[in-house]
Length: 295
Image 1 (cartoon, rainbow, N blue to C red):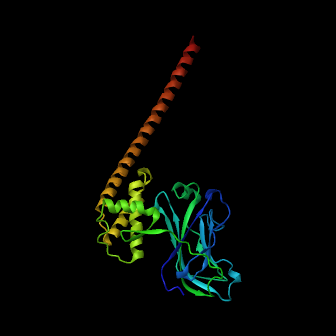
Image 2 (tube, rainbow, N blue to C red):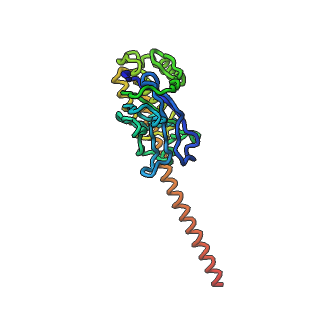
Image 3 (cartoon, rainbow, N blue to C red):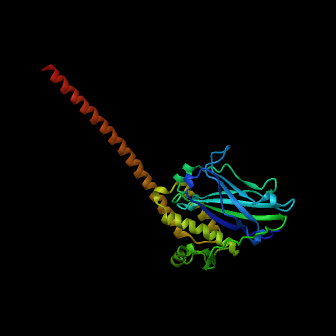
């Protein structure tokens, strides 16, 4: 089953993430019609396990021992740990095809490289919530569909200039097309899913360059933006306006780095002056005490 390669996404959030010391289990969800109506859980170990100090992510089949004899699912899946403060810094974990069965109903990633301090410092946690996306494609299914099929999670989408977008993306997309109407006039991909994927990249770059504070942007972020612009340009997007914005942001970041370095140097000089003044005051006090002793 599952000849279609359309991937179904499930998104969930973990509240009070920094305070969790025990594994978290997501609500039960379905991978939908295109993947055989299979139900799943996601397990998250926020602070790792006995063999790993990093956050662990697992995809799991519920009730593995109550299923038909010799059931199995050959599945590819991936997780995206979303960074709301800078979507280009979101972390993706992509698995090859894994076989789920009664003996091995769980599979995932134990060395994600993500620790609690890392997630906090890089802006992954907003109000102590962590957002995770799950992408699943079931290539083979043996043992039938799940007896209790959950409705597939649907996100409200709208079409903007031929691109299927989430409602939350419409405002940014309209601004782009109204301000720079040539942006997507000559794009090559006609597949709807591929067009949407490219538009998601474009919107992420737009949000990064227009809304990310300069002090939070790193060289790696700007390099990712540059690579993304190259991919979009090769696909036919006209993005001179974004390249100019990238140049301005890069220059601004360099200037800010220079100011920060200058500020650090001034702070160092100030501390040296304060130390000299402290030593001078101590010397004056000592000399005064000696004169009193001589009287």
